[in-house]
Image (cartoon, rainbow, N blue to C red):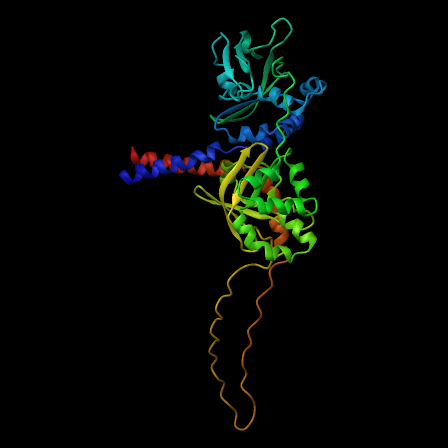
Length: 410
């Protein structure tokens, strides 16, 4: 009985990540009528913030409802403020909304929780009316000029982690729509030099347009794995023997054109593209063992993340203990196995005075499959889209096992 109880608790615990995993971008991709809203969740990096949450409600607006907002020509930082007002930090599915009391319920949004909203701004009032009508209005809206948005339908619900529901229009907030200051520019090479990666930073500055490429990619999201000076200094003789193109690609190989926090790297293992990925693969694999995150290259190098220089969307900058060597520039670094002993072959009986014995020959080992690079690239492209939502079939299987165990226990 005790063993069954422990097994039941283990299965229940193992089900938790399955229930919590979601990707709002993939959810909305199934509904073209929300493509504009989905696009701006991505470019403002709100999608990454949503996916990191354990509990969230997204108030989605159709393409037609987004049109008045786009006509105002807001900057991306201001657009982020407006859309963060549409992300509530509690779970509100359709059923819960229609069970709310008749008086207004105040919900906190990303805009309020981030600290960007001054004073008491950033809250959303949810009101239940007669005939089951549910409305949403920002706490700082003017009742005389603002018409509350109404609940239209539920798009996706995963109790009690994520609810994506459609509302009729954008939540207009004077505070959220006020011009927002652009984030201070980050000088990537200066940051690296000050935190133990001066050699790598110097090579970025002296190798083609490497530094410019890194710097220009920050706004769209960038994760950099920077070898510490000890590792880079030991690697310099190899680096100097590369062609100019090879040097550039090696440096670009140390960055992923997507922002990944440490938590995201731990939960999003797999093959990933790099800044060097164009005509050839130049992919790497992110793995983790508990809290330790490692970066593995097809050439056999396994580097470990040993520190964090900066982890703030849209830039993540980590230090690693080895230089990443791509397969496109270096042969696979593996120890040669000891030769296998020659097979003992029974000698055929000799014919008197003539003939030689027949010695069987071994077939050569097949060469690596020509489709390996294509398979790696496909895996990288699929992984770059975001965390994979766990399958409902797996959840059903776990639920069935749990039910059986409960019958045994009780």
